[in-house]
Image (cartoon, rainbow, N blue to C red; front, side, top):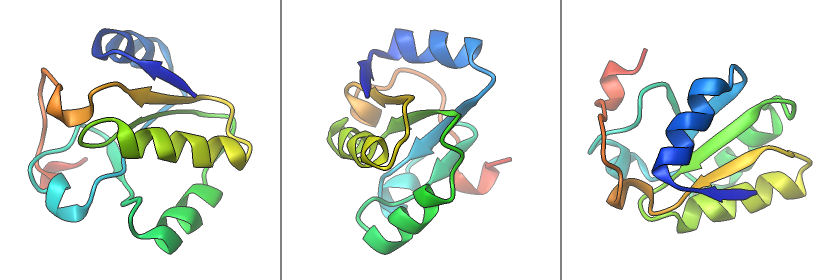
Length: 108
């Protein structure tokens, strides 16, 4: 796991054609807005979270965020324990995000 700043997040995702963005907040938190193309997987729904990540491609890069950076850090650690090698945690999460968000219903 690598903790990255918002500037690093934007730069790495722009250069990474294997990037998967994951939002690990609750559905109520996600309703306030998500990052474009984010896969929403609530880390508090443990069985769904584990089922979902076990089906993901371990060769891809995962850029993970939450409200503050704490849960996304936990998600990165869980994924590393399962063999994922490229997990990135957004420092400060959505509390410090400076940029566009979309409503989950606008997700493409």
